[in-house]
Image 1 (cartoon, one colour):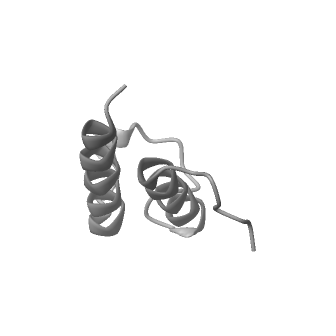
Image 2 (cartoon, one colour):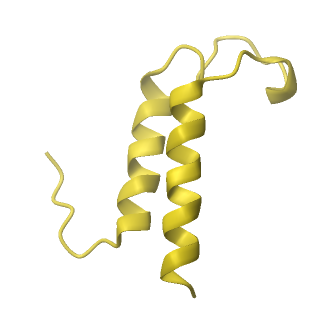
Image 3 (tube, helix red, strand yellow):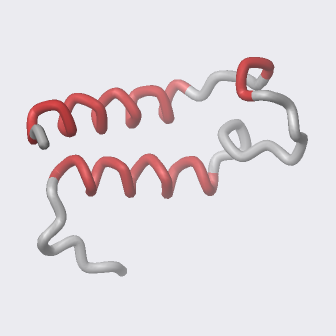
Length: 60
């Protein structure tokens, strides 16, 4: 388990998104179709929205 000490909530959310996408067959397809042609992953979209909200709240 990686220690998350010292990371901001937005950084933790980004890591959760990356971790999900690496294991999800919808997010990491074997084919090379453009993203616009792939199936949508609701979990990834929710994680991305959470990351965006946290990033906006933390500011620069």
